[in-house]
Length: 125
Image 1 (spheres, rainbow, N blue to C red):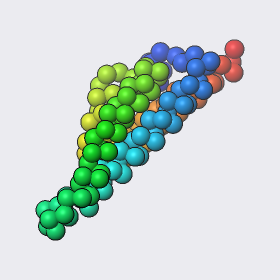
Image 2 (image 1 turned 90 degrees about the horizontal axis):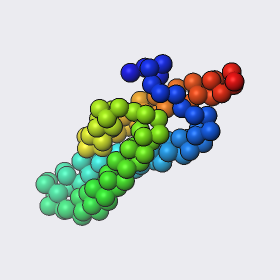
Image 3 (image 1 turned 45 degrees about the vertical axis):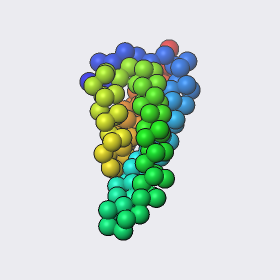
Image 4 (image 1 turned 120 degrees about the vertical axis):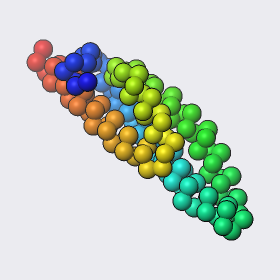
């Protein structure tokens, strides 16, 4: 769906959308880093060195913060009118190493394009 086909964003809501984007981006990076450390450091240590400390110290926070990521993604998606399919893909991206960074990149580009369109429309008024 292109930005031309989506419902327009009210220019008065731009600051809160920017805030929601920042919250989502922070959570995407935190969850992504925890998952990469869990998979690339914790799992090899657990199975090859019989040391599960890294798994415990990264796995549990990743699980809890993943739920916060889903909430922030839903909040952002609701504000910019994302379809459910996009929200589901973003939620799934937090479960595959490195994919949360890719999802964050495309989500940021999409939201910034929508915000630019809203700002341009507000300038025309």
